Image 1 (cartoon, rainbow, N blue to C red):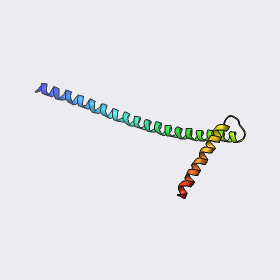
Image 2: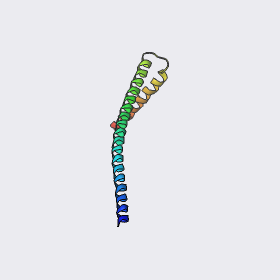
Image 3: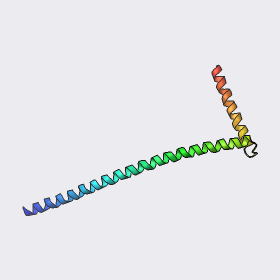
Image 4: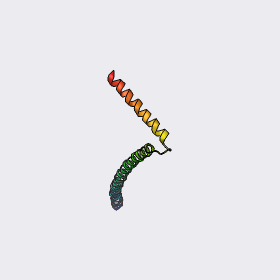
Length: 96
């Protein structure tokens, strides 16, 4: 009988260790989930900030062209022509 009791005791000890390890892993998993959520929210914020800066840059580039900068005149003319075509297309669709 003592041999069976030893086996049962050893098994209980191993089960306790496994359960303890499982709890530790659960806690670690929760910490990692929180860290991931924070990283994702920071990434979204950075993406929005980048988009805002790109819009500001494009606006500034357009303003410089209108003010007489020779560097981007061609690009601005092309952009204006594209906008005019889009407006004409919208007008033609509305009148149909």
